[in-house]
Length: 126
Image (cartoon, rainbow, N blue to C red; front, side):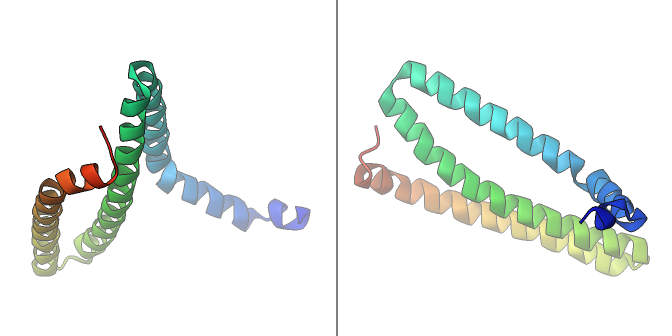
């Protein structure tokens, strides 16, 4: 195990990985702090508010995971196409990403607006 840690290759890989992932790590840390603060404040308001916040936070987390996955995929595809010099495919990827995001946002938002009263009644949320 110690032999693996002393290898130069591993140090380079870890260094390169950290240089790529540190922005997302910082973002997720601040999301954690914001969530912790929200729970604290909701607890001061009342247990019903804290319960409702807990439910909404789970929904938010699911959508954040999906949005992050789309974001990372879009950045990966567009950066590869940008460096390849193929401007036609690059423009197509940008347009496709924008259109997909817009359509998915409108669809998910519409579904949320339509079904939120039913969901709140079914789960007895205040």
